[in-house]
Length: 81
Length: 373
Image (cartoon, rainbow over the protein chains, first blue to last red):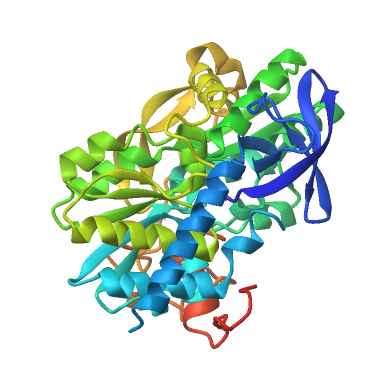
């Protein structure tokens, strides 16, 4: 149930006083509430859980993970077992 | 899909598994808290890529599994009332109460609706002013901001026909309970990444200090999980016990502050019974007294219920990491997803359901050269 899916915000609007958005999940689009991620706007990637964005995905942090993976991968090549 | 596909590459999973093999010198027991992670581990066979010294045990992070039976029975009683539209996340419908489930209430004429978001339940209340809409607000910290917002939205819209049946649970008190138990075997944790997206991980350093266990905030894709395991093993091998973040793209130390703020304005701490486990002190959230008008337990006078759990089910031991699903004599015999004895067999996050779906049956998703589906 704690499933969270990253989606890209393609449009922002207001519904019943809440800041809402349409987010794209690899082709599927859904309405998402942005109340908890005021910094998110069109083009941001947000992590969505039960219709609410709960965090804005950090591209910098994602890049860091990728470089860590490359390091570990390279390590494996030097000392195979 | 961006931020998903790149965390499913088989070569990265294998590189991390090789790194774990290089790092490990002794046996270690690591618990993944979240049932979503349990399913990913079993589905992708990640546990089978690990060296034999690493044992993964499965934690209590399955909200429908730990929702107390008494509350499930209460939900069934409320959902059966003619004036009620009962709205729930889909996972909850097949969870066995004392003898029946929400599906059977629906079959008997009760109006039970599956909603994707609690705001859908608010909309139901707007559209059906002559009916009482009750939303089954279960879940961990991840779900609390959404459930909290539904209350304030109903209040803002002046809705008098909307209420919540609340059964919120929190992760850190459960970790306390697991680590403090005399029979505990857990030496390191993978913390639930999406709980931490909301709450941050500032609640974990007191746990790592007190019990001397590493806690690694971990995501949900195969690469994320393998990375969490790797980092936990590295800490264990060098005798470290720190709260560490292996899910930096979604989690910060402080967490989501606007979400935490609304959670605390909506809910207060309370003792909570966990199904199969028992009461864990201060492990739940209930509505604050000022929001009592939205509390379904106050709105509906439910006659006293005598909950009756299946005597065969050992879900409580499984949820505490003390047993595995295939240790249970009823597993895949008396208890199946179609005829479950316990909630762990039905939920998309239950450990028994994961073992049934991916472990025992010959449908394990193989790790191939290409991406993992």
